[in-house]
Image (tube, rainbow, N blue to C red):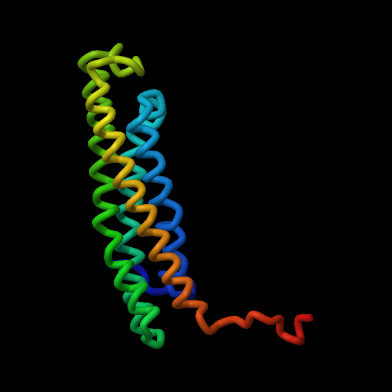
Length: 172
């Protein structure tokens, strides 16, 4: 599906950075675009495009992680990280669908009634905007929390016995 190694380094270790940046960035962008039409106007098609890139990065990273899992010692921390990682795809799909819906609703509203979307107090777009904002917030926070949980478990799995709390005598 994707690369297992990149320049001799496990691809998961590199690809995970894309997920850690893109998923929360997409979530924040989605919420801002859903709340403020002026932000959506500036983002335009970039919002669903960003969400699509985020979505694509998740299975690529997960696939590379499954390869890495087969090449490291298995323990409870690795298994927990793997299980949590498998749960991110639905959040990434929800982010993409919500971003596409917010973009489509904004585009539709601007083509029907150009002045209604521009007004922050317009009654035409307000119920839709409030609903979109609440759903976007729920999806965005959920995705962000999931990325945090996965990253925390991955850091624990990678570093649980890889460092000392005291400095090495040679590094003084």
